[in-house]
Length: 458
Ligand SMILES: *Cc1c(COP(=O)(O)O)cnc(C)c1O
Image (cartoon, rainbow, N blue to C red; front, top):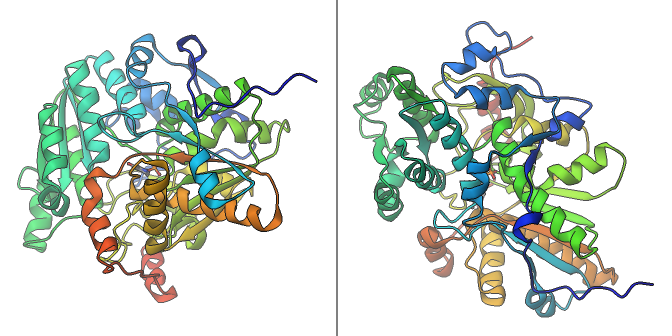
């Protein structure tokens, strides 16, 4: 028998081992995700219709259910090389501290200035916009990670970047805002006077602190009203999940290199892009009958779209200007309780992740935020990295699974996605440290209100 290779703390791929193409899991899915619908006609969105809002090449990727591999253009691969491959880390210290026979690995995506995996899609979307000869892009940002990633990518390519930032974050996260401005983006607090939809909302709700749904509506309007601009989105869409497959492809390549076989793969789920990207190559194997894994998507108990939502067509934004997507959703009017601090607050879920969950290929679970911050703090003290609250949902479940192994004595291999760092989330950490963080789980009545707003689609 060949001697086992010793597993290093951090597995980095060589440059020539990095993926040259993204993997499109839709090609291997028997049940494809349902098409986006035009809210005016309730018919599937055509490439032409989508092209008014999104870049041409990205529309092609959005609609491509057939090609398993889509080459990553050289310019994007060159950018990736500045911060990729990201390390696959064996959490030896965490295993030791937990006294578990489980082997724990995490794929760390926080090693770039924007601090999260979002840069993987930001550079791709900015590249295709530039390639189409556009002047700039518009987007929304809530907590600020996506806006930061996009402003970095646009600065690199010399593209104008206009960010509509939810007003409450704009005021409470001034440093996030300044990072974006440092990278040359213009940042507008939303709702604003600069768009018709913003003015309308301000008139109806003077002094409102804004919402993600409203910022999306403003960003879409800004894109369609300016010559040479398109709108870009940081999660949920098929194209974003495709770009994020780089996470899973690298993870799998690193594991194959050392003969590591995963039993459980865990990711946090907001709009579904990181978990979808991480699991794509592994789900591909399952769909082709080559391997079997236990895959767990983790969401907040206060925004439980997979575990308690409905699988239905819904609006992607509160303003109801975007196409309808078939997904697990809490209704586009759903807003998580005000004490929810941990991110992952989107009402819906990627149609790909939703379909995989519906077909029983992946599991989902929800966790309460005090338990999430407990895990975050534990992890920070043991492994050194200060995790983003979003990522800490996956840490929580990885720790819980490792503790189960301790009871049963099973030596399972657990892999989870550590999507980013939490330096801009210290207000949430402060609440936890002061013992003032609380949990709120929506009641069935709370959820019924959101479901009541679902559009009727036959
Ligand atoms: C945005 C974000 C998420 C959630 O988004 P997905 O599209 O579900 O991946 C998770 N972690 C971090 C650090 C983020 O910035």
